[in-house]
Image (cartoon, one colour):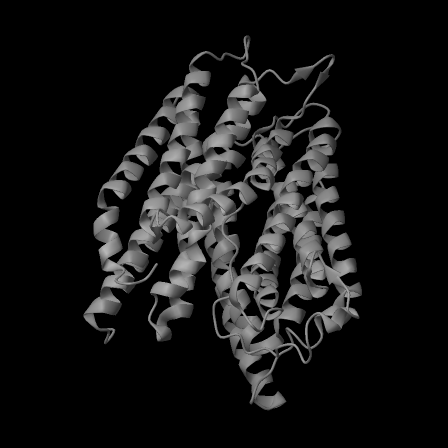
Length: 515
């Protein structure tokens, strides 16, 4: 859930363990893995608890009426979708400077610690009622997640200096932590936010992040020297580099603030939806231009250019996938609120709690898919990377076809069973397990050595682009009936999935001997 596990792009200029990682835990292990994995497992679990807990409330809060016992912001669906899309996109994009800061200025350990507190500050800021505090809180969460998210994954990898299958198994355990947080977060924040007050839910997300930081600090001894900055620069040189980076960063923030003020005052005549659209198209043009550059002027061999074409193709597929999959937080959430019968006896299930279904299916099905791929590999029948991407898109499309069928029968007066959403999330999870795990592995295998960090950055941007367009697509509910929107998404993602399967043999040939 929430995209593939990512390593920080950049270098990885941090110290490895000074001793056997198992010895750092006094000989004790965590599910057969180094004790330090437990520190990172629970840190990520609580961070995902806070992230997905808040995300489950976000669109519902923005579109709720401004009057009543539990008032929202009263935004129209198009505006809420654009804000949601830009927020989730920027979370991924800021992982790029977050990884750079860890590699060059702070080390992973400090980046995680500072990022976690910024996230907590963001949730607690959102717990204060008011539109300015809402947007300020989102800004803090974007910055904090950019620091924390990629660097936790990097330290997980450093726990296994020997690499190999044991490292892959460690990441599988770590992935369970992500989904446990994603499962419980919406249940808690939805119960508080929808049942009592939106800002109670936002505050609960902040409490979860603080709990994660407490156990992170307590588990530091189990990490040894992993994650501390190691550099040949003098402290003065590092300080100068830091000043230069943050000067540029805050300069960009100032420019964005001035632009936002000009838009808000009407000097620049743009809506939030238009800004999001132009941002998305600009990112597409920049990425396409970058690939044209590396193909023509990058100085690579024909074989390397073929493999980078495969990366570009996967970038497009993953962007399409996330643009559909991330409807979970927007259009599917609104369908749960407005057109789903959530009554259990005399109690109404909060709409946001249905956001936990996907994470629950991930926990149940991830081991099954892991065994399936191994079994197919033993019989030389494991699908290729481009074929798995196509299968993932078809799973996504199947889910939307089901929901379009359910939505065609639903009205506010006669809502449909939650089973429609449960089946949809099941099919989406199947699709996710086909396409999501291939990402980082494919990038590291296909990239030329001097482009690995850049290509991992491209993968981040693909996820960001998908999230951005997910919000924009959901905004179409302003003018389209839900069944029409879901059928449109199903048709587009299904068509791309079929295309991906048709061309997969040719794409596989471009990969050379890469498996």
